[in-house]
Length: 148
Image (cartoon, rainbow, N blue to C red; front, side, top):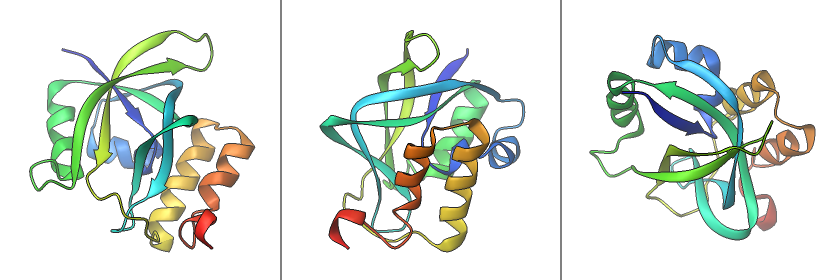
């Protein structure tokens, strides 16, 4: 069974996904409307509901084994991330699809490690996110840009 997965953080990085989910297929860029990107208190990417915002990322096509692998990596069992199926819109043609999205249980704002921040930003560049969105990702380098 194939599952669409919406990646908005370090899993936009193709090398990381090849190691984590061998055989997964990179799909198109997509938008999650009504949500906002943030870095959680543990220093990892999350999204939170925000009516006027959107999160950009990419879709991956996964099998059940890949989903199980991501569940382990994202710490679903340890209650670090929960997962939901949400509607995302493909950027190229506005087609809406249901996709698996991992949601941070930790809603505090934090600061990413330089390594993690680099993986997120380079992944966003690799998949071709717009430059203004990449600038927003980069702005989290030292924590929440609004609270600086």
